[in-house]
Length: 223
Image (cartoon, rainbow, N blue to C red; front, side, top):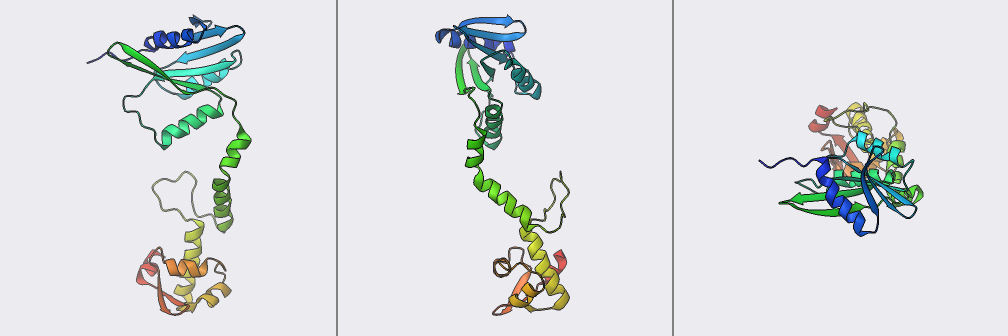
């Protein structure tokens, strides 16, 4: 069984990397794992085996004294670029922290700077996510009652769409077959009623004739 990579194993390759860039590199300087100095630019690199909240806190504190701060960790053995990884990078960007992955195998090591510690442009980030914001607000405005408990996991959520479908189903259950016009007069959404009935996503509705629908047994069961 191979020895587990220690934090101190990350030091030589990271030191060589910054030395090659012309920095004076030292280890363990006043609590900092690595310092790299070139002219007046001071960089601090924190070495850890994993990304943790404590590490992020420590790195952010280092920003009080350094121009730039990096976090260096071993490259995960089963490294995958997935949604979780992208979210992690976004957090580091938000904190203006750089990330270095160190790959050590068979005595050889490579350093990969995944992300540089650059200023975070919040306005740009908001602009890039305008569509998500718009959809979020649309969903909020489409809900009339709060049927979901915050923090719930593994439960069916009542979305604005499902809430509108429940209202239609309740009307059909109470009054029997109705036309789309009658459903709207009972409070169903003016824009969504026809599309909800036609899509019949939950299998609750059955078309009897043009513009007239009834509730299915599946719909009665779900209500």
